[in-house]
Image 1 (tube, rainbow, N blue to C red):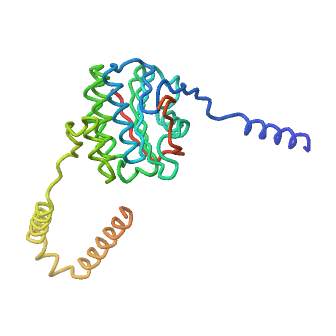
Image 2: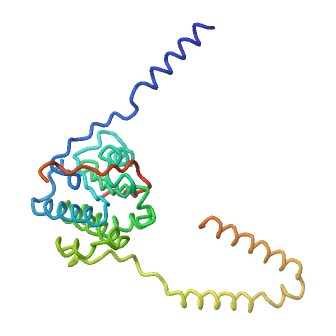
Length: 260
C-alpha cells in the first residue's frame, strides 16, 4: 500500500512538472502588431497596420496585434489566442489593455482575445458584432487583406474612443480618421420602447383586467408579486531598430470566435 502511494505521488509530481501548454509560438518577425505567418497581407496593409498599432500604443499604451497562421495544429483557437496574448505580453502591464486577433487560414476560424483592462470597451457581444460586420463577409471570399484591415481599424476606433490623450493626433498621422468608426446595430429609441410597453399593458388590461380584477384579487396580487420578484432577479443578474514587443499584459478577459 505504501509503495502504491509513493508511486502515485511520484507520478503526480511528474505530471505537474510536464508543461501543459506545448504551443510553439513563432518569434516576432518585426514588431508586436503584425505576425503574417500565412502571408495573406499585402506589404501596404502590413505597413498600415504597424503604423496604426504604433501610434495607438504611443497615444494610449494599448496594443492591438494580429496573427495570421496557416493552422492551429489541432489546438482550439480560443486557447491558442489566450496563450499567445500572454506569451507576447500584449498590452501594458499596469492596464492589461491588449487585443489579439488570430486568423487561422487553414482552419478558417478567427478569434479576437481581449485583456481584462478592455473588457468594458470590448465586451464579447460587441467583438462578435465587429467580426460579423467587418471580418466574416470578406474572409468567406478569401479577401484576407481587406477583412483583417477592416477589423483591425474597427478595434482601433473602439479602443481610442476610451482614451482621451493624443488620440486625434494618432488618427491624423495614420489616416485612420478617414475610416468610418464602428457603429453598432441600430437600437430602438427609449421613447419607442416606453410606448410599446404602455400599449402592451393596455391591451392585457383591456382583455383580462375586468374578470381577473373582480374574481381573483388575491391571485392578481400574488401574480404581481411573482412578477416583481422575477424583475428584481433580472436586475440583480445584469448588475526603433529593435522589434517592439508587448508591454507586459498578463492575460485575457474575453473574446469572440467566428468560422468563415
